[in-house]
Each structure stands twice: as C-alpha cells, then as structure tokens.
Length: 117
Image (cartoon, rainbow, N blue to C red; front, side):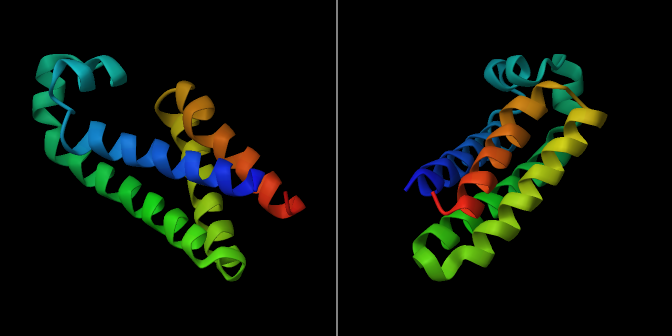
C-alpha cells in the first residue's frame, strides 16, 4: 500500500512536470518554476515540450504498473529506476532541486516497492 501511494505520487509529479514543460514553459508559472528568463523560455519552448513528453511517458509507465497490480512489479521497478537515474542526472547537470523533487521520491518509492510495503 505504501509503495503504491509513493509510486502514484511520483507519477503525479511527472504529470505536473509534463504540464509545466509542455504547456506552461513560457508563462510566468513555468518561468518561475524553472527560474527562466522570458527570452530563454521563448527560445527553448520546443525543447521543453519534448522533455515534457518524456516525463509523461514516465508517468504513464508508473500508472500502468499500478494498474497491473502485483503483476506490474517489473514495470514499476523499471520506470522508478528510470526516474531515479533521470533525477540524479538532472541534479548533477541542471539543478540540485531535481534531486529532491524527482530523485528522492523515486528512491523512496523504490525502497517501499522492494520491501513489499
């Protein structure tokens, strides 16, 4: 139960990131979330939308694993590891904030999943 709640939380976070990157990137909300200048947000809008789509795929994989229940263990494991790796890479290359927003929730969900919680 705890693992499922944490996995759902990770998936919802990634849906929110999808919305920010695909639809709100060059708005005040998106610029504030990612600390972007208006010019940079405008110039990088297409790249951000592509990035948002990938976050949506991560969320979809996690929701699919949850929908499959116990038989979705491998899906949940795979997509959580993907989120964790992406979060670690993002924390090193883009912003330390990503470590707490993306990687830490994925790690906690992975631990709960592995322990059968």
